[in-house]
Length: 242
Image (cartoon, rainbow, N blue to C red; front, side):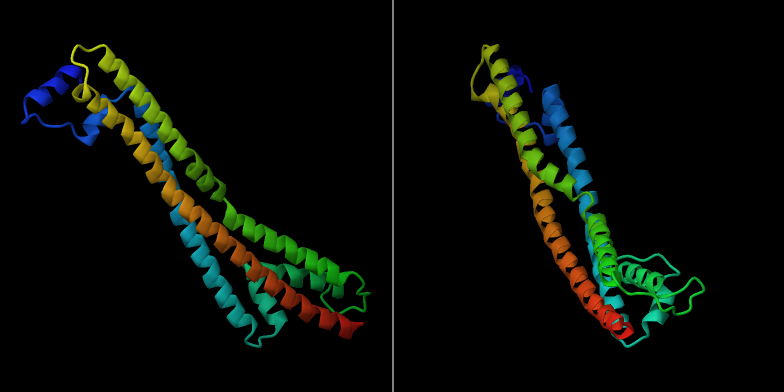
């Protein structure tokens, strides 16, 4: 809205105020670019949030299912043969990696039990499980840094749009013979749009970034707890073999 339209709005109460889209289209180019970037960041953050909600829910479900089967009393060799034929994640991948290392250390090439020395087997199995835990947690943690970056930068970008819009509004008012609140109001409204949008983008990104970080930490502790329990089971087998 130009200064003449603003003056008309004061003189004529029936003059319609511009819509939000109208304010965006009439805003300075820099403010429009800020709004466009914030909208892209908002859509991107929503995609990441939905993806992570699905991934964490799937990881919890798979962990519950595996623990139920593992502690049901099924033979470890049978469970290993069933799981090693397919792609696994979470506890299943940790179990398969540990059993694979166990079999490499205790069996001959034809699969028969061989009287091999068991020195260092425990340490190798624990390292293998630690690597499996690290990889799975890293997989779940991907793109969480993006959410944190959006949460930190969106308000600053919105404030930049606010400052630029206010500067343009003051410049327009200074060059008008009708300088006043009526002439500056549209520019102020255009300036407030990117600021509000910046906080709108940052709030869900910040909330879900913190939520996923807590869930990743909880999931890692769950995997490490299972790794310790399974390591104890294999340790007893090593002691018996020794």
